[in-house]
Image (cartoon, rainbow, N blue to C red; front, side, top):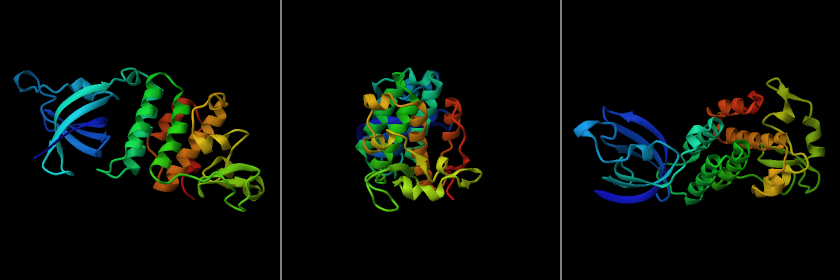
Length: 271
């Protein structure tokens, strides 16, 4: 029997049998894994000493677990809140943003594959959402960083069509690279699934500042001053790239966009 302790973020909780919970956790050292919190839903004498409240939010917790093998189903033996985030559960838009980040992990992380950089990135996003930061801004940067941390990324140094480094006015989610105004010109005005091509998954206008944001993906004063429309473009660029990689839209994206008042974009689907 293997026993270990690790920092964890609880991503999903589902009832298991009559008195237990099946937890899907993202741990710093073990990656994505499943663990059973036995008896945590029981009452009276059958109740166990595990703190069910510690498993109910978006906290960073320290869990103890035991398993028969490194990749076997674990049994939770202890749990303690290390970094609480009580406010996040009560902020509707922030909660939807956190669910978008969770779904990205489920789609693109391999179980039992440690990635401390992604763990810290998810903590950064949840910290921002818990402290009341703009969810659209948090997710715009978080998605780009996740795409890079998972080994995909995008190119911002030269045009995908001709290779020049000047007049980079659009981003192509299909190529994962910026495009100059000359190479983009033939596609401007075309429609995809009834929507303008430059507003869909093919070409996104970068305006005056988004090219620098795409390069660095940092929360600077310049980024904080960006118009909401530019931040929405950054978020949609991340979503479109994820659709290209996963061949299907995220289920959590439409309710998040609806809560923000952003227009639905059916053309994020691959052509």
